[in-house]
Amino acid sequence: MDKFTTLTGVAAPLNIMNVDTDMIIPKQYLKTIARTGLGAGLFSEMRFNQDGSENPDFVLNKPAYRAAKIIVAGDNFGCGSSREHAPWALLDYGIRCVISTGFADIFYNNCFQNGVLPAKVKQEDLDKLMDDASRGSNATMTVDLEKQEIRGPDGGIVKFEIDAFRKHCMLNGLDDIGLTMQKGDKIGAFEAQTSAVRPWI
Figure 1 (cartoon, rainbow, N blue to C red):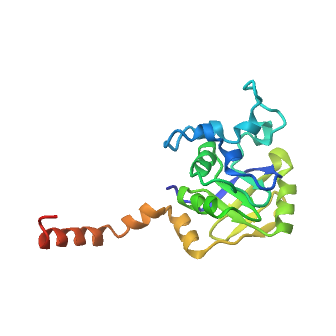
Figure 2 (spheres, rainbow, N blue to C red; figure 1 turned 90 degrees about the horizontal axis):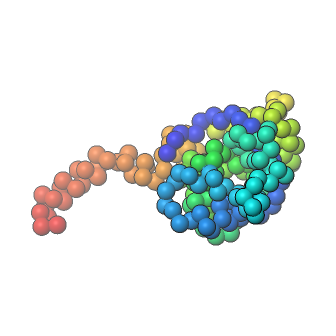
Figure 3 (cartoon, helix red, strand yellow; figure 1 turned 120 degrees about the vertical axis):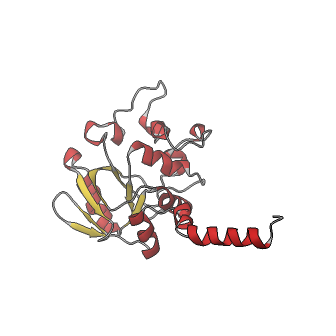
């Protein structure tokens, strides 16, 4: 997993509450277990019309937001069914941070396992960031995980909450496998001892 330290990029305003995982990555894209290529399906039912053409009204299709790295979203982002494809799709598209007042638990946990930072802020701070994100190509924000702050285009600072252990893992690029591999020496020693004591295993 790539480390997350400081991210600077355009923030896209998605002022919708209860964005569920089927909206993030519709079910027809769940046939693969590959983590790449899913960006094409991100928000596809909102990004594209039925004939496959782009919906010009959807925020990520607007020129100012096509290269967005951050999404500022309404409350309860990532609700609905459990699918790890949702953070995979965000990451593959280039989104590394979603800012909201709240996230569904499973989606929230999946983000940390895949290098996407779900930043929780207060409602008044979200309102300010949503307004900042509405500035188009001038909607550049900086998310500083170490300081736990988001700096807006006008220099304003918003703080966000994060568990200390999750923060450590994100800063160091550690998912569950990475955490396990940090104990590689102990695991190797245990396996060697087990082989010596129980050679029939």
